[in-house]
Image (cartoon, rainbow, N blue to C red):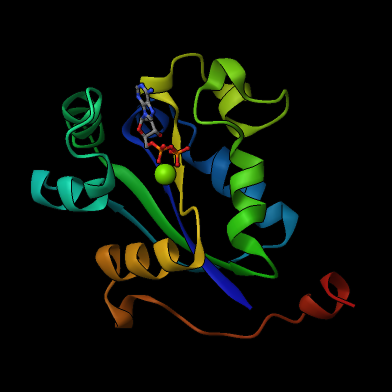
Length: 149
Ligand code: DAT
Ligand code: MG
């Protein structure tokens, strides 16, 4: 089973969308392993988005991501890294496919509601950046036999 890091960004929290967004992942069948509301520090934001340092949108991106609390989560499931990315849609909500989270809830790229890890390496890095090992809970779910064949 794969794990990924997903985060409802400050716009999603301020707009009261966190529950609906978590619900989409739960409804699909992905399992919550970790979940918390947190205020990201500038240092953590700059580390998290380190790959974008030097780009024109880096400063606005960091300011946006620390502008209010986020809801951070770790999801587990079969192929969850790509599956969660597909549910989020394209980076720019204006270009995201109808029905995706970004297209359903957003308009501008700088207010795109949600983050999700883009690879196995990113997922491991981001889970470790945002969660301590003891904040992740392993448990079995009886419904899993109705979800997976
Ligand atoms: P994603 O969040 O889809 O993985 P990314 O990692 O390329 O996209 O970029 C991280 C965030 O930076 C993205 O969610 C929104 C912002 N961003 C990316 N490209 C941008 C651009 N061309 N203009 C403004 N903001 C951008
Ligand atoms: Mg990315």
